[in-house]
Length: 50
Image 1 (tube, rainbow, N blue to C red):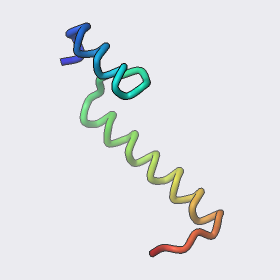
Image 2 (image 1 turned 60 degrees about the vertical axis):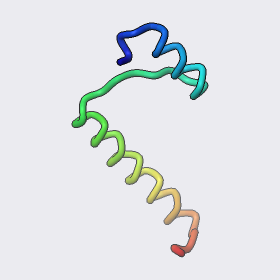
Image 3 (image 1 turned 45 degrees about the horizontal axis):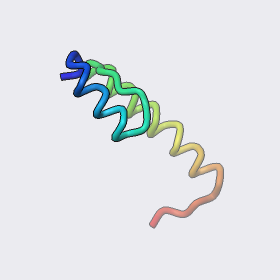
Image 4 (image 1 turned 60 degrees about the horizontal axis):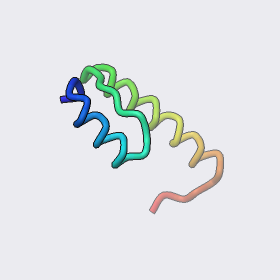
């Protein structure tokens, strides 16, 4: 889908950023790293779980 320049441009315009593809494994690694990073930020800031 991202090989189509018009689609890629439309997605980048809609999201306001660069759009790039990835494999399921790369996406899983990104999500895992984001969860780890933001969990630490939340914990360090003392934000309670609701």
